[in-house]
Image 1: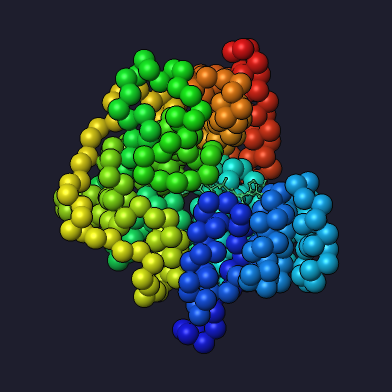
Image 2 (image 1 turned 30 degrees about the vertical axis):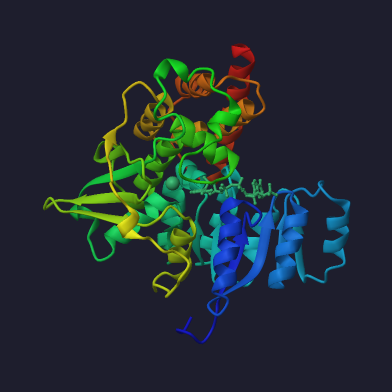
Length: 392
Ligand code: NDP
Ligand code: MG
């Protein structure tokens, strides 16, 4: 890709979601630099068709298309040259479309195969889908190295760390400070957390996100996934990753170096900034999208996470320490537990109990390949479902 001569061609998977829509917004506002050549989602055909129309894409993929017969007919008559559907649609799209960067904004374990398909072709991936790195980090990162591709984090904390590390050596890191807003229950007493409502858990104080990650942010399991994600991306062991409550969500994370210096990356909380960074890397694009009025920021606070209050965070640390397929199992089990909570089948406090029971029952086994990850994913979902049944 030579400078300004050609626009970077983006394949945006998870295009109908919270991150996906922000990605499309960045592409729309910087249309001179980015061209969306493909979009994908699970079942929201109406949203997909709208995006496909706006960007005149070459390629469209969806897993199941039951929501709208009209949209399905519209896709059939749209003249989009390449349409993929079914269980492997996203992987096939990533393997068979012409593009420069895969933007993976799918939620959950389904993001793994398309990421692998892009990396195998030596195509870099801007990755919001943290579950991929949690479940299969060592496999994915090795694939990237072997094929000369990059994994560029979109998650705001990891984008911050990535930016702090530009020009630095990994062995200069003393510690990573991962910031969290503390979620909607940061001011609740531990005893009050057991039975909080779905509606209350969905009220995040600083970020507007998809439902699954919003619940994960309330249990702090999201921060646990991010600890594992940081380990995968930067090779830093669990004992040198510290989580700290930072209520303002302005400092997106920090790196402490061996000489005692600490670097941080700051901005208003708006996912379009880490998206813009990942899309334009290795350049920095001139953009008016994000305006951080430093004069309006009155204080920046950093508090320890109260011990015992957020058991899901401790469970994630244990999963990382045990390694092998344990993180993949916990990530899959969490999808099942969060879904059960959102559908009023378990109480908030039981999300941790489901995860704990999967962690306790899970055997230690090596993480060999993607097939191993898939097998662990299926088995962990079954265990989690059983745990939910026995809780009720
Ligand atoms: P949303 O729930 O808003 O969107 C999820 C997207 O993924 C939708 O486009 C959905 O399609 C698609 N999708 C889900 N499952 C499948 C599947 N099996 N096959 C194909 N497509 C699928 O999630 P978010 O945008 O909030 O999050 C996306 C990812 O980014 C997650 O991994 C999350 O952890 C991560 N992330 C999100 C942040 C945020 O601010 N939202 C911040 C940092 C990370 P459909 O609409 O058809 O269901
Ligand atoms: Mg994050």
